[in-house]
Image 1 (cartoon, protein in one colour):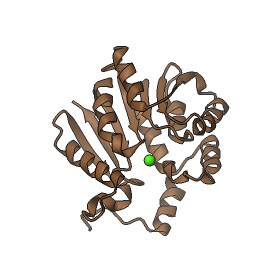
Image 2 (cartoon, rainbow, N blue to C red; image 1 turned 135 degrees about the horizontal axis):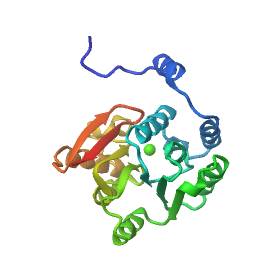
Image 3 (tube, protein in one colour; image 1 turned 60 degrees about the vertical axis):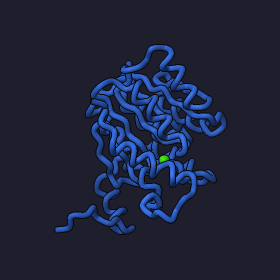
Length: 220
Ligand code: CA
């Protein structure tokens, strides 16, 4: 038996999806719609969306936060799993791409649960802090501009309640943080972020090789 996580070749990955993915039709539509977008690789994997939905239910999340909306796949997965009186604050600086997201929020009848904040996420998070919303969020998903990960994280950590969960996406960034020869801005940012979180005693962590790598961060 191997001590390592299994390598997912295409056959095994397709098998994983075939025996576990229960993707609602509306999420599939959103994913198919995004497949032709030039930045389609920014969309999360469907099994990751299902994992987010699972966590929302498991943790009884009522108040959620998302940094980086793109075409709305993850926000849709979150909002559809929130209770009727649940709420998601969704941050993105791209008014055009989030119009696609809004289309699917409307279609899925979850728009009422979502506040879209267009602008720089750091400013939006600072605004939420100024409104005394610190220690109130149950769940947050960070998946936006990689060089700002640590700045998002510090703010999100204040907004999350003790015992709340933060999921950070792309922490393995196609494997490049592991290769010291790769020094582009995004890779360095993710490498530094991972090292800082490793030593952050305010939280518990678990990094999972799901999709492009995710870190689950539980606030003490
Ligand atoms: Ca991502």
